[in-house]
Length: 353
Image (cartoon, rainbow, N blue to C red):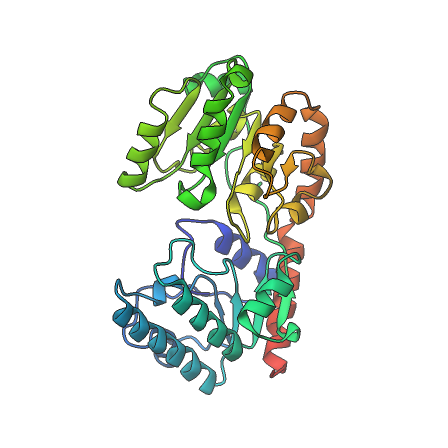
């Protein structure tokens, strides 16, 4: 399973562990073999591989200028093609349409289209965007399997009493805490969230907006300046380690994810894992995952949709909504997901498209 991203996200570790009972032995190659890393791993490793499961391809597409990026792009596709010549099958999970921070989105889309032609099978995490991805990447529907992303219920500490969590985070004990937690990036609509809060101080005067997550220095400074004179906003622009994750979700009343553009959302699944109501646009996988817990979703083309949903949350029965979130999250069981993934592996071994 490549690349190894287990330190940043428990997703691969949870999938690998769950696959074991379906007869799949997963290896995470260590180090970086130069020139053709995938092919060299298959050829020179002491292990015999039947299949490579590719996830995020950005680490293989280096280069800060167009020439280097093009060179790495061609090298990566040759690497994948050489693996295929050895008889090893390749399954690719598409997590993003293109990388959100890509400086060369056209080139990245080109490499993704060509990769989709080479690999034996493709996994998507939601049905809603299947047709769009098939059209964008120009591959056959027969290659695609839709397998949900599993929950994080067993990864982090369980929730604690809300008042205690707020005390530990030095947050007000009264009012709602609207939480936005995850990597802080511009495409996640954080600045829109801050503007919405600022323009409606009369509505949110007794409540708190908590924004937390890792950000680069430039964006962190930009956000600090933006909230300087706005009441009720707490910004923590730093990596939140797994020992503290539960404090933030225990302190929160509702999670706000005002994405501008998204295919899948780990932050959504984390919020669901803690049973919290979610405010977000109706885009990508979000409605599909929340199902009947979608009362606080808004249309992405509604400029006041975010505010309307935030205001609605102040009048909604959140206990009932939370119950529906928990039921929706029950579907994201890793055993079922591993079973479907193993089936995809075995089909990829047998079929050529």
